[in-house]
Image (cartoon, rainbow, N blue to C red):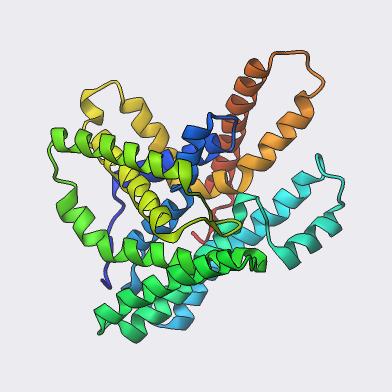
Length: 328
């Protein structure tokens, strides 16, 4: 599994785009039956897909791994964190210094930036254990199971570590599973007929949606109500998104879905910006529109359209003028 994916695969960008949009939508006032389903898999998905694209063989040493992750994950994370803390002064009572110290000590809490350091730690742990146990595949699988159970145990004893570290072990299990299933998904699973594809989408949505109504997962606060059904629900949601993105990519040239493909593909390539800035932009817009005498529905539409436009502008500025911050 040392050489994962040699070039960018379109459906992976589409899948990431679909899921990042669902993440944003999941933080709105959706009916609980839908929001519960989205929450059951949207963060596990990003760990799983990171595992699929994680090329262990690309890092010739631990030092090189740490250097690359510093450039591509931690430096952007630090810059974006400073920007978000600065922006948050417009809607929070805390000063920049107070908010900075709070984040430094406790982490990001419910802000989606919590994901980045956990992804770094999950990849680091996986990288280390991969090299230690790569010749013993059965024991490697056992380690992934133990890691998942460890996060569940921390949830059961209500031990919430700072920076969402309680969830890192569950993150490693999803990342490792994605890494191990990558070849199967890329080379075998994608070649299903349209009939089988729609059947799987329907069944996975129904079963995953049903599980999500009774068992809940919130990796930000490491809330795992029951490990096995939560894990099954997450995997069903992940595979649903993957299968849907494969279908959309395969038939994009022949349907009216082509614009959707490009929209999801764009945001799939730029998930970091949505993750970092979507919530603070929304909160700023809410603050700015509080005094406007408009209906809640119209207000929500204006806010979401404005948010995506602002996100697009931020994304283009960083990609064209400040790409060095992203490690490019």
